[in-house]
Amino acid sequence: MLIARLIADPDAAHNACDAVAHDIASMGAALRDLNLRSFAGFQQFEAEGDDIAAFARALDSHFPDADMLVARGPIAVPGLFVSDMDSTMIGQECIDELADYAGLKAQIADITERAMQGELDFEAALRERVGLLAGLDESAIADCLADRIAPTPGAATLVATLAALGTRTVLVTGGFHHFADPVAEGLGFHRVVGNRLAVEGGKLTGGLIGPITDSAVKAAVLREEAAKLGEGAHSLATGDGANDIPMIEAATYGFAYRAKPKARAAANGRIDQGDLTGVLTLLGIPREEWREV
Image (cartoon, rainbow, N blue to C red):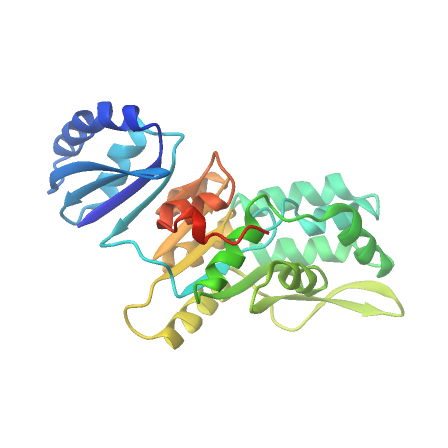
């Protein structure tokens, strides 16, 4: 069975049900027995069959702005949650904000945007941006954390609720441990994976220490952690940029959060309108079980 959950007006969902069925049939998809059920906070379309792409396309044509999750089989609380940090768990790109302390924000932010759109090689773009920060005082990181970096709305509630339900939570970022470690501690993640800025004499050298956390590493972390849970366990991933795509695709529930077009297209879940608690709603976790933070 295919299941699609949408945060949408119940009347609109009811009125669109026949049109969705017609669109599915016109695509030649082998889906049948489409029906609609209403739950607190979301509408659920169900269909027999396996053509998840056609199912998603038909729904998207009628609900292009709705926050949504499309999945195979019953939707369950995941045993694993792996998330990107910048512009996902926090509302900023750390390297862009840090660059402002060096008077280079516009230059570095342009490179960041192109990398997140998938227009540039991630590692090369990262090394270029870090190189431009050579000579910046390390103290700028603490100032940036205190003055510029804040969690995305709903992020703390999402992490705390999942952790309370027994979900393993991992923050994996193409950004830096200088930022990710305090962010993860504040939000309650169990593990952090990221890059390390090189510092000598209290200043950034413009280099990095150790291997790069890139898109392949993000996906590998998800698979590694999922393997520990055993067969049949569900995984959840959230991200916004092109470097999150392999991780999003590897997850049972891969959510694009206010994402770049390529990441959004790769995901089977999306949050475009609401905050990150929309993930909890679409997973079917009752509001009374949320851990408000």
